[in-house]
Amino acid sequence: MDILAKCISSLVKVMPDTEFSSLEEYREATALKNEIFNYQIAYILPGKGRMRLSVETASTIPDVTVRAVGYVPSMMPCYEDCDDYIVSDKPGLFPDVLEDITESGFSVSGSHIAVLWVSVNAASAMPATHHIKVILRNGGEPVCEALFTLRILDAELDEQHLIYTDWFHADCLCDRYGVGAFSEKHWELIGNYMKTAAERGMNMVLTPIFTPALDTAEKHERTTVQLLDVEKNGDRYTFGFEKLVRWIDTARENGIRYFELAPLYTQWGAAYAPKIIARENGEEKRIFGWETDAYGDEYVGFLSQLLPALVSFFKEREMQSVVYFHVSDEPSGDNPERYLAASALIRKYTGDDFNIIDALSSYTFYETGAVKTPVAATNHIAPFLEHGVKDLWCYYCCGQYKGTANRFMAMPSLRNRILGIQLYKFGIRGFLHWGYNFWNSVLSYDRIDPYYITDAKEAYPSGDAFIVYPGNDGKPVCSLRLEVFYDGIQDLRAFTALEKKIGRDRTVALIDLGLKDKISFDSFPHSDRWLLDLRETVNKILADKNQ
Image 1 (tube, rainbow, N blue to C red):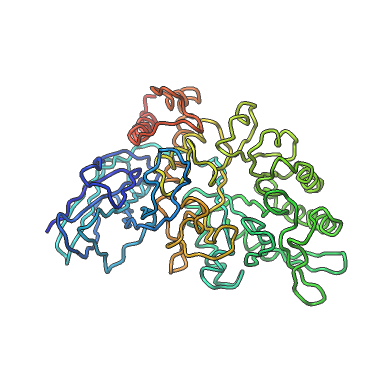
Image 2: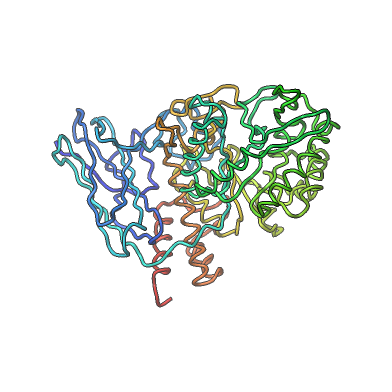
């Protein structure tokens, strides 16, 4: 019994009830010689029954990886008032986890479509037209072949100029794998997860000098992951940087260049101090936390000793341009005085040598001068753009779900990938997201298994809280959304390469060519073919030696 198969683009989300006949075939494309090119193969048994399969590839491109697209459950795929550009608003199964295929193969049944994810490393082959054959075998006998033609062009993506961070939750690695904070096993996990992040475009890492005061219910605590050693002697403090040095070295070894320090105040208002552990009289104990007034003499005195020590540490290593401070995530407009006071204290010691970034939604708040580099929500970014804010960053999370790009599981993949074009067009310097591996429930009340709970216990649309899954071998398992997001990063790099060749005005004009409404952060075509054709056009111009 042979299997029916067809190649489809990486932008297609095949739901469990998708009709095979409705899938548009996608059989050829171009790629630049230093990019990762992704596509999918959808296949189905023509009748009922089960079959165990193995996968084989045959190509003149040596580095071709095939993974199985796995499905995960979602009880909360979207908010009730979401827009209509989604694949499903009903609880159910969504394609997301990309599973390695072992030598023992995998089973398929005739009850639904199954999907393979194919990643092609164009850098592993010479520019030329290449054919990629993926063969499915049952008991050694071929039962299906899918052929794709990829023409690798003699042109390259530009280097990545965007600073990109998905918040790296070191405590979730401890919790999931049952290891002690900064034990040798923990360091191994940290390196593995940083490596995958960097390979997919993330070049900044959230650095827990103290346990991040993020997504934690008031008076609750997350597992302690504190890089700085603190010794308390009366009202005097000394600091040890050994673990921070190892963190920086580990990050750099795995491709990370920038470091954002965990906020020095609690989230959503900067009212309290983060949890801080110190050794006093030979005993380790918590000296600051939810009970600490962030503006009281004790904590201000602590920061007045900590900040000069940190500044000196980073200046000795000439890291001023790659270290970013946080005050408090998402400060609200009803407490600007507190945030201003906290920001002023930090700036007293950092001066203009270091950058301060924080996520905000209010341009009025930015006008207070409290944040040197704002990270604007994509649904509130228009005033920042209109006023020409320099070195502007942006972010999205659970609140950006009407008309904007995002990467919820219920959203079409184009809505994930389109961000790369938006970031290019508006000259955005950095992008921040809060969930690389947040494997907790809302506000960290509970630890969760992300293979079974994808919505932080029905708090956020599935896919908001994490973009990798924990692998049993201590390495992350990529999501479909991570790969598609990286396709968007590669789009951005293609456009910056094109700008160097034909100029920015012509490049932006190409993006908007033929569109009734020009690309903005809340307006873009809902067409896979439009985006795929645009990249084909860009690729061919880059490879044209006469232009």
